[in-house]
Image 1 (cartoon, rainbow, N blue to C red):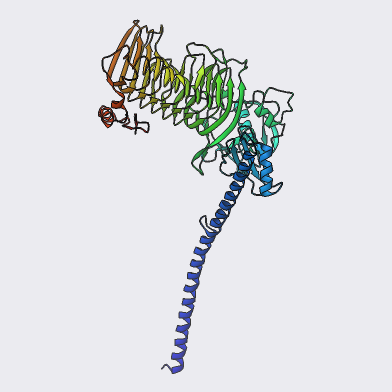
Image 2: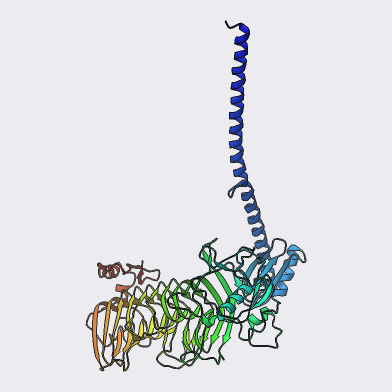
Length: 600
């Protein structure tokens, strides 16, 4: 029989159990809440990180405002409105106090360093201030197999070799070329053999400027020796890179067969290599064609393996042979690359590549291109490609740079197409806005060419699309297709094709859904040679009769329209779009900002 005491004790035990259970639950809840709170405080989007970012953004805004104020004062005190290094430094000292900033003239730009934050800003000569950039310390300069903080890299896609400073880039060049030195654990190691980096990945991890000491870990170092061909200049690295022959192209003495990527994943843009200086115009080492070696940032690649993408360069590049902005010759793929460098060479000169490229997409040239060589079978200059000897696809590319020289083989996109066989070459969705001999391609010598969705918008000497189609004495058929394209540039000859020249066998020229509204002598085709067999298939081709009074060598399939019937006219847009039918690769048309039909 249970007593009252027993019942009380039992109730107390139950209450104690409930209390303990409640306590445990409370603790668990608190721990959960604490966990959430800790995450909210310390996570990637936590309070601490958000506060740090807000503080950094405030500092950057303040620094940028200081630079802009100093620039305004410095330009105001110069009667020509220019920014001088000494004036800018003086104004910065007034804003921040002496010793807080360093202003340096590095050629086309000035850079302003804030010592306390370890950040810097680029300023162009018009006074525009760039975005904040961090000064990066590479603990292993000159060793691309080790990351800036000591990580071991094997060149795989997951752990690519890294370029953090000029020393790394020079070492990379030395390794490909098989000469000079590299650094391991800070010690100099002589390179005995060339490394093509076949199947390996190399990434550019930051912007580099050859004239800026900030892009070097030690711009005054001399252990890389004589690179620029001047043994009496002290051999400091920054001097080697900016005088004499300058930077030695990656693959000038060997082939680069890897993948090079300059993508800035943080902001979705390409990293930049600025003030690149290469001067091999007096190169006496000959290539297989009897001219100087191929030069550019890269010299020689491999048609099957070499990939270069997401890269922007500026500066000056000179060569005695094949000379280009990104690579001299031979590559599998060049993608998302932009050239601002002025490029001058003797033969096969291009803003992006000289020749032998499997595919080139989304590339742009803004630099001046100059060819010094005379006319011969392989010679040519182009805003994108100098000589497309093995090219298969050129897509979504744009040229704004002038293509100059005594050689008439100068095209806004391609100088010469000269393939060793009937290789099919596609030029798709390309635009020329630079002066040249012809807007898209100057000479089609051998091959099967298709131009689609492309346009010329700038004045050219000979033709808006192609200057000449001819095969000379080669016993070969040529086919050229120009589809869904147009010309608005003034030319001295023809709007679309200037000449079908000497052909020993046959040429088939197909022009469809094309219009010309550029001032010219002949609206569509200039002259046709009587040698060989020429087959023309012309359909839905239009020209502005108020600008060109002469149709040219052919009238069938060509229709004349007035300016008002072409410009700002939805009916003409409908005509062009109705001609597309089932051609899914053709872009549709719309009225452009200038009133003329353009692509959607």
